[in-house]
Amino acid sequence: MMDDNVILVIAIIVAGYLSGSIPFAYIFTKRLGIDVFEVGTGNPGAANIFRVVGRKWGTLVFLTDFSKGALPVTVATLAGVDIGWVVASGIAAVVGHWFPVFLKFKGGAGLATGAGAILIMSPVIGLATIIAGVPLIKVFRDTGFGAGAAGVGFIAVNALTGSNDIAIGSSVIGGLVLLRWIVVTFVLSSTR
Image (cartoon, rainbow, N blue to C red; front, side, top):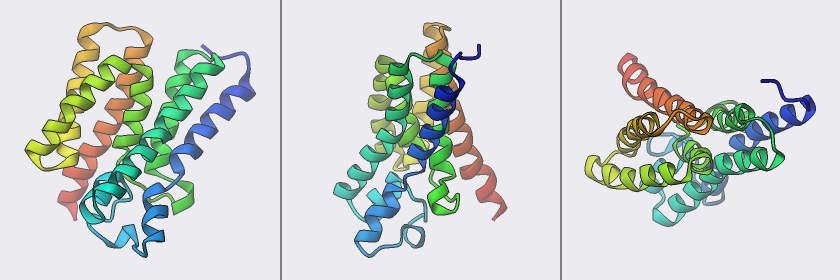
């Protein structure tokens, strides 16, 4: 359903994309004299910073990347736009993280940004998924694999607990992040 205030909706989507595009991993590591694209996996995201720079900086990048998804969804919710546009603001933030205008469209996986958007939309299920995902990351010793497994669980729980618009919307965001992780991890890496 189209929102009556088209300018507001466009502003919310653009703001979501621009929020997602802020390259915190790049900004923080540049200040430390490190080029995030040249170290570890070359991915400008929290997982790579945890591995290469350490827990303190990895946590800071995670929290700022998380906020890139949480903030647009919060603003869209407070603006009172239709739930479809709230979901679109979260998707725009994740797409901004994947393809940031400020880094020539070379971004990260979007796990933290997607988690931020999802947690605002479905706090209980989102928090439960994050809590379940942390042990999986430790067990598999792979952030992407652990987060991917948690993402599958999130989508399954949402599907089982109801099909309201918020559950569907947050599952769409989680599904997109999961799909991109699968493509990058298993499809594109096998062609290199």
